[in-house]
Amino acid sequence: MAETKPKTSPKAVKFLFGGLAGMGATVFVQPLDLVKNRMQLSGQGTKAREYKTSFHALFSILKNEGVTGIYTGLSAGLLRQATYTTTRLGIYTILFEKMTGADGRPPNFLLKALIGMTAGATGAFVGTPAEVALIRMTADGRLPPDQRRGYSNVFNALARITREEGIATLWRGCVPTMARAVVVNAAQLASYSQSKQALLDSGYFGDNILCHFCASMISGLITTAASMPVDIVKTRIQNMRMIDGKPEYKNSLEVLARVVGREGFFSLWKGFTPYYARLGPHTVLTFIFLEQMNRLYKTHVLDR
Image 1: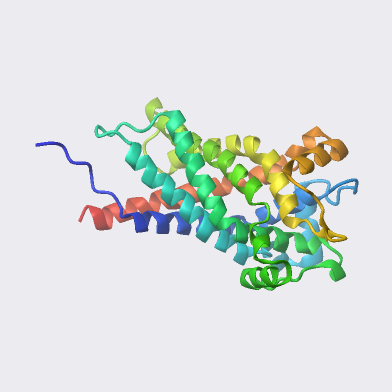
Image 2 (image 1 turned 90 degrees about the horizontal axis):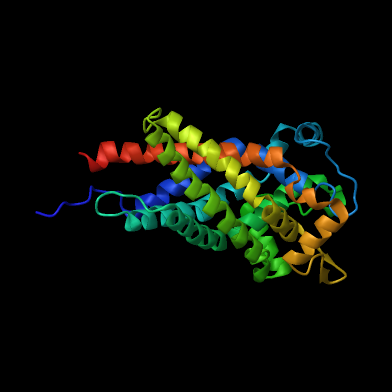
């Protein structure tokens, strides 16, 4: 009799767990996401930097906007995870299982990267409207009161953007968002799987939370270094305003050229610390939540 593959979770459950894992992580890291976005917009063009360090940014926000100010945009962050992460992790998990051999051998590194890029690009397209709302909501507090957009929540933001600027604006920056997602997912998902496998093969780790934590931290570091230049382009395009009826930036290449020309080449990696401080823990928490939900589902549902 041919060997049968072990039972796995239904596709709907994979998508649900992916979204819940991302949303759970967002609740913890939203203040770091806010600081990251503010740092990337600080010193835009020839303007002097508003924040010297990520700690200066955090304390300035707390001083000027209060404790609730550091959670500005949480509703948009949660919607982003519900759309982007649900799609991304769900598709990745399904494709990963499809590409796993009958003997249980996992896909090779290049295949993992391809699966990650496919999942990321699809998820990014679905999640772009929430991403636009998030960038604008987190950036609002740095503007003078008369220039603020003043969105009350993510649904108010989406409705007003559609009404005031047209529905196409919800997908503004879609190309750099998808490009960033390709870079992030190729680095994050593939390096997580590869790091986890390497740690298990070393013999020093079991398949437990410590292993997941270490693999996530390695994955987050690689992802930060690879994706920052694309992320700053995405952030600035999605936050840009129309000046005399024309957009601030024509395309992604213009953003790159202006950042490098006016702020210096290494400004593409501006705020490496807050970026990793946001992405690292988010990667850790997302995968820990995902692994634990999968483990509980297997124990209480599949193995019963």
